[in-house]
Amino acid sequence: MILNAGQAETSGFGGSSRLSMVLVLFILLCIVVSTFLPNTIVAEEAANIGAGSVEFHVINNTGYAFFMYKISGDIAQNPTSFNLRPNGGSTTVFVVNPSPVGLTKVTSSFLVHNPRFGGDFDRDGLVIVTMAVRETTIGIPYRRFDSVQIARAPLYNPIGYLISGLTLTFNNL
Image (tube, rainbow, N blue to C red; front, top):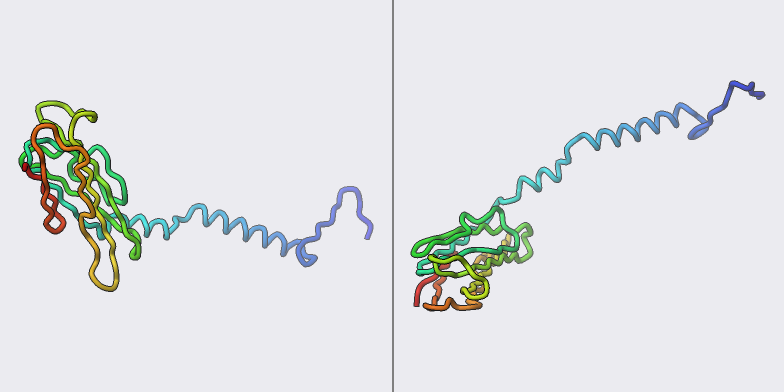
């Protein structure tokens, strides 16, 4: 076959240019559709965030103010309060375990200070509370305050604590 100057021959997949063009258009269609359609897997995971959270309650029955300055771990939402006023202030921490086989721990750090003055990290008390959750399909789930550490006692009056189920109460000694 002799080609003239203005003609060109296109050979494609299997010797057919039409089949190659259809294949290219199909690949482009798949890319465009996957780009603009929502990813249902991500949407389902986002809908499960916060589902089945365990509520841990912390109550302050001392004469001190507690300020939660740090929280780390898997929480479903922010605690109900970061400031626990003296004599009855409370907060709820929502711990969520995204995995049915693993143990999830959330650690909250509180600065314990005189309510008449601002907090001072070098001088005031420091309390570290760790909450743990392990959900299971067999047996009893593990939900408890894993540890309560009074890392640095307040200057004037010592404090203690009492754990009852998922409620932690701080008291004057």
